[in-house]
Every structure is written in C-alpha cells, then in structure tokens.
Length: 350
View 1 (cartoon, rainbow, N blue to C red):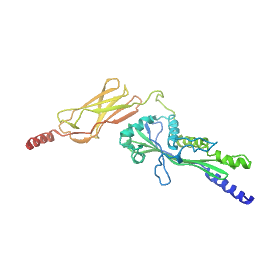
View 2 (view 1 turned 90 degrees about the vertical axis):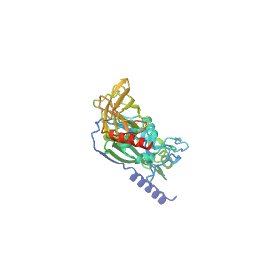
View 3 (view 1 turned 30 degrees about the horizontal axis):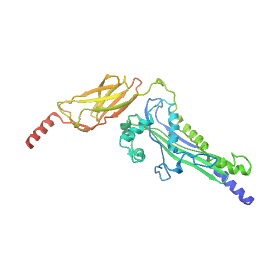
View 4 (view 1 turned 135 degrees about the horizontal axis):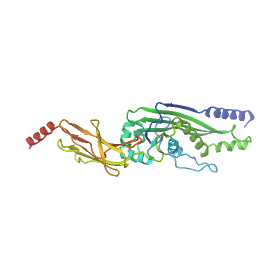
C-alpha cells in the first residue's frame, strides 16, 4: 500500500471515529418522579432498520467470538440492557415488580407466543390493558434501537441506541420518554502508535468490555432524570402483591336475589376491595385470616350488566397499590323485572 493511499485510509477511519463518537441524549419528564408508582419493566426487545423485532440470533449476541480477544455469549443485547435499567431504577422511588412475575403474568394473560412472550403484541398494547394483566400502576417499555460493532481498517466503532417510555395505566399518559445513542472507538486516536498495534487495537474494540461499558453509560444517562431518593417509603418494605383472586359465580350469572362472593390471597395487613367492570366500584373486602380477603356483592332490583370483569385491588399504608383481574369468567346479572321475564319466557318454551 502506497504512502498516499495509507494516509487516505487513515484519514477516512479518523473521520468515521470523529463522527461516530458524539452521543445524543433526548429525555422528557412530565411527572413528579417521587410519586409512588408500582412499575412493571416489560421485556426489552431489539428492532432492525424496518422497526421489526429481532429474534435471538447469533449476530445479535452480546459478545461476538473473536479468538484471543473475546468469548461467545448467549445473552442478547435486549436482556443485558434490561438488567442494567432494572439495577438503576432500584435507586429510584419506584416499586419495581420482579421481572419473573411480569413475564409470568404476560404469559398467562394472553401474550404467549410459541417461543415465549409475543413481543410484537406486547409493544402494541396500551399500558391500561397490560397493567390489568400484570397488576401495576405503570409500565416501562424498552427498545434497543442500535447495537453495532464495526471495524473500519484501522478504526473500530461500537454504538448503542436505547429508547424507553414510562406510561401510566389509569390514563395511558406518557410520564417519561428518552431516546439515546452513543459510541466509543478503538484505533488511531486511542491505540498505540505502532503500525502493528494500530491493527490489533481496533479488534480489541470489538471485545465485550467496550460495548458493556458503553451500554452502562448510555443507561445511566438515559434514566438519570428518574433517579430520586425514596422519601417516606421504607426501602426494606416490599410493595403489596395479589397472588390469586376468584369469585363463586361458576356459570357467570349472579341471581337477582342472590349474591357474588369474591376471594383474594394477597399481602397481609393491607386494604382490599373489588370492582365489577366500571359499574360497581371498590366494594370493601375483609381480611379473615392473614393474607386471605373476602367480600360480597348483593345486587339491588335495578342492577343489570352483562359480561363484566371482576377485579381486586389492594393498597398498603404507603399508598402503593396492586390490582388483578379475577382468573375465572366475567359475570352478568339481570334486573329483578328482567329476571322475571326470563323465567316466564323459559316456562312458556317448556
């Protein structure tokens, strides 16, 4: 390679490095981060240039296998970055649901796919519907927009892009949004001066340590506006959890002169109530034994509704809440006059 040609190659690589290493961080906060929220961090995912979810493949592994430089790993960038975000958000005032519980709720709440969680369906769902399944106040969506490690002759550049959105369930309001992208390089400017070293150093830039450190920096800068110290919440007190809930309307019908009994198993010592759709709200439940809650609904003559979901909610002394839809079927009730007409019509048919 001639001297002029080598100079041109080095100049191109240097320009690539200079343009690739400028980080951009756009963040917008529209709520008080000290507000107590029960947050579910949804499974992070990675998308390609066409905004399609990338499934687990060898070319998106966290660490590419380079003999003598790095080792192979089966951890995806999405899973790795999600872990970093969870670690950072534990320093905030949020009550984070365990990731295992979030994934289990999604799998049992209609978001199952043949290979696990249906990420495309999950990313298109709104916060209200997701939290009705998970039992949370808000959800955090996380998307890896870029995860590149490129080698340009004498320069290697690693790039990480991350997008996160925190959405409240009750009104589907966007509370926090951030879009970040940053790069780091090895070679020319950061490597030794010898020609042999210039060739080896960019390869080291593809080692996992570079992109791991870069991803950590990106996550730290992205969620920084959410970092607040807990105020009155006791750090060693876990938020309330509903483990199971059900009702006794086996057929789905509540007799007009009968009653509906609702049971729940949840954190002991909290306030509990149940609702039926949007018509019957916050019927008190009583703790009969530690963690065992019981409540009853007696329809009045005018009550009439069809296929409404029964849901249970609990609240602790810090104001933290949890909500869960009863696992069995939706319920219906006819008004007293409708019930009589139904019985008479049945007799006529007979």
